[in-house]
Length: 604
Image 1 (cartoon, helix red, strand yellow):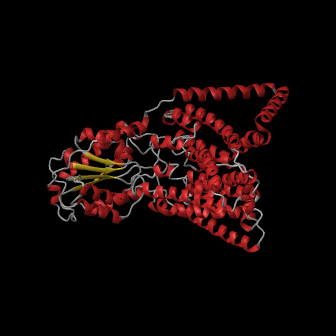
Image 2: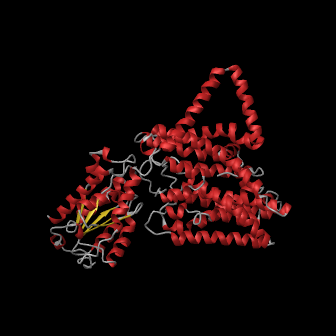
Image 3: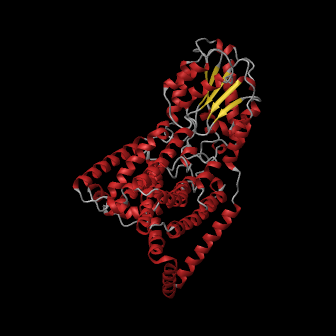
């Protein structure tokens, strides 16, 4: 999330807005539901600045000095990353529990800048988090950027060698951006958790490439020297419109919305590109973004981004409700800024100014001077540092892998991987269920009579459901929402997989409308009973979801039954994982018991 550049205070201010949006979003501010788009603003800024520097090098010398570029990148990014990894590993080790699980893989992925692909392999979902909060989840975006830093300079060198005109070079970069946005739209599956297209470098690289295309048309040095008033006014107007568009998106955007991945993100990145150019030009937008407090925060934005998530994760994993309390949110906002200020002063800024050797000499001189005045303090600090490194090493080397909720989710996927044959009764009419005879047709229900559609809670309970109802057909996906249920049920019916009893376990990931519930009941059809499982999720929508399910069932008692999972698991909170949402194996058994009781009610 950082690039060195010829000082453009407006860009520093823009970085401040981007990191502020991300941090506020992560502390669950309900009024900034699209704050995650700050990452896309960072992507556009990075693509623009990196390409401006590389292109200027080529225009000046006729070549791109790749070695010097990558050396600067390493000096800028690696030292602080290593420090944050060491401190975070130490904290996760001392915290223990679910937060410790998988730490070794997460650290290894971070060190090799492949966190985004590793998190996909681990089913670590950004918008549908389950289990302990992963302490290094935020590094997915840095991995996308670093992969861009490694590949784009080589490709740009080839493009600039083959195409002499800047417009042709920019068109090439723009075509690659379009390809990335198109891949996102094509690979996105409506109703499914969008992490594949969100984490993927191929699908989420469009902002970086769009920033690169703009830089090849109007690079940083040229934008900063614009003097014609009509040009400056036009760029200012575009920048102001871009800022307004980004602000609106930050308030309204939904990370699970199909619109975002099928064109919405293109608009966000175009707005970010317009604002980025305006931040470099000598106009009113750049002057506003050059406000001193914004510039101060922007120059430390890399550190704020690196530190904020481990602080929030440790608070969240420490005890129930701590991170969501007012003091916890204040700590999550203030502490990362303080840590970033310290790391910028003692590590980032002097390293860039002095180089590795000069920085090491300066540190040695300060340590010798401090040791002469306060030897015990220096000795204590050295011992504490060694203890931290030792704890981090032991924690990473001995961190358990393959256990916890992630393993339970994986076991659930294996349990439902083999699909039973279609039921003979699955082709029952899909007309609206108007008769109470539906219940009369589900006597002596076994697993071969049940289709279950759900989200990660059902997926974590899939093995227990299979044991209770051998032959049950479970279709559960992490991140699935109730709004996708009608389409999913239609698909299952067409495939001959909609059986006499339909269990719907959705609502964990968000609210839904009464119309959605009615559509589910219409699709389930006459001759079937529908069992709705309510939710236990410490989120703002829990009460609304459960109230809507209760009301919907009460209005359709001839075909619908409620499985009261919320009340049942509330009596046994120790049967939930640390996220207080997903059941441990003992909780999964309780889930299966609750569903079984509701199926019995459907027969009575």
